[in-house]
Image (cartoon, rainbow, N blue to C red; front, side, top):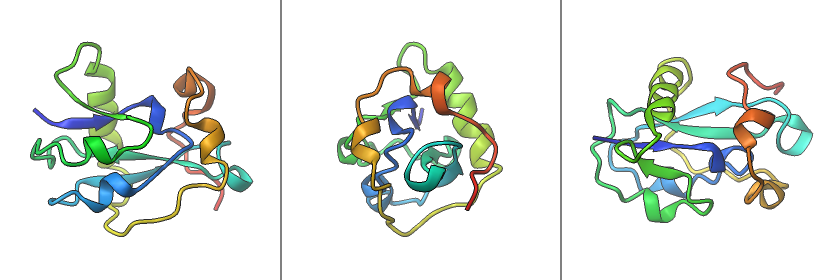
Length: 121
């Protein structure tokens, strides 16, 4: 069992969750067309590195981190697993995008904004 990040993280990219992770299993996955200057992000958890301690879950402001055993998490488990293999590990807290608050409660962010292609930097 592990935890995974889900759609509510898209566009908010608050790294408070990553800061408390004892095994540094968070990865920074660029997402297109979100955030200041179109370079918002979603954080990804490597489920093969996650020790299921759960300390990140209450630290996530948009409530985007859930156990992979919850119903409907198969898609997110595979997405977290595949993309964590492709993107760099992060270990330092960063700043959320300036416009993160406008994305916090927006519905259906995955179909609107998600891309596995790198954002312009």
